[in-house]
Length: 204
Image 1: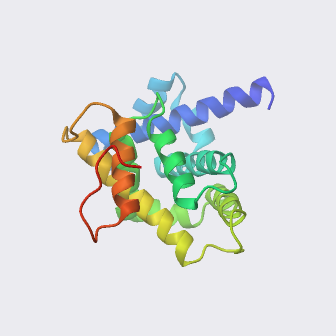
Image 2: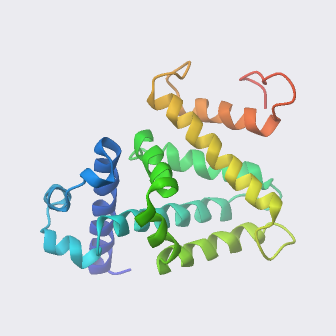
């Protein structure tokens, strides 16, 4: 990627991140494109050169997250379980120095409840490309050529675990101030199942 393309990619991501940040505060309907553009240092017209609407900015962010997940999972040992690989990817993304728990929670909620966002997600070429790559990376670790019940359960359970843990973290209900450790404890509980007693935090 050349310098010009790199700058455009950085601006696109900055705009998408700003939309998500403002949506985390007052909801998607409260987000002002003028405010977002000014915050990033561009005009509203430039915003619309990148995105037709603020929903499209969030869809772009979804594509970026899926791409990063695929990168992390692809880099894990081939003999590692899918659960452990997905857990690693989600924790690395959530604990990124630029990540804010409230924003991830907002993104997950909006994808589940905002009709216009759901519609755009289902018709986004970018998301389709990243979903295909994500699917290819996951299925390459097993014997299937599509996401089966096991793969879907792993991903859905891991995402739910991340959401619940981040909600507790954002509400100040975590028992300590180490986010990476807290997320690891949450994933351990889900991985261990709920039939018995909760595992100790120092168990692996």
